[in-house]
Amino acid sequence: MANVERLCASGVYDPPTYTQAIKVTGAQSIVFLAGQVSYDKDGGVAHRGDFKNQAREVFRALKAHVEAAGGKLENIVKLNTYVTDVRYRADLVPVREEFFGKKGPASTLVQVCALAHPDWMLEIEAIAVV
Image 1 (cartoon, rainbow, N blue to C red):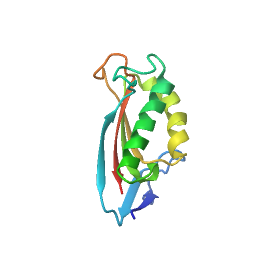
Image 2 (spheres, helix red, strand yellow; image 1 turned 120 degrees about the horizontal axis):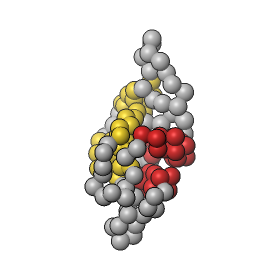
Image 3 (cartoon, one colour; image 1 turned 180 degrees about the vertical axis):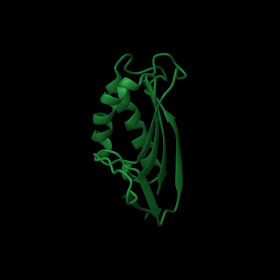
Image 4 (cartoon, helix red, strand yellow; image 1 turned 60 degrees about the vertical axis):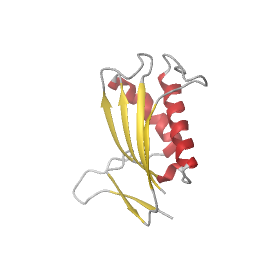
């Protein structure tokens, strides 16, 4: 079973709600999760115009994929989040904490000019160790 340790180097600021680095030992598999968006049951856009519910749908998809690979949310060690407006950050953090708690995976947040569909407000890709 993989051991996931959150850490921060001495002399580097350690934010209370952000993980600077992840050390993994004993991993058997690495799972690369493609960018997830808020799909409805037919492959269309779910929760148009509702950032928080789009985010919840994306995190639910990530959770489902990592569980299908034999892991848990705790096995996700890296998130890359793409938003169409950086002001969504204020709504993203509490939703992410619903799934990961205060100190989640190492993360990057980037604003992009567009995603593959104009109604998607965010896309998140992940790496998990199982």
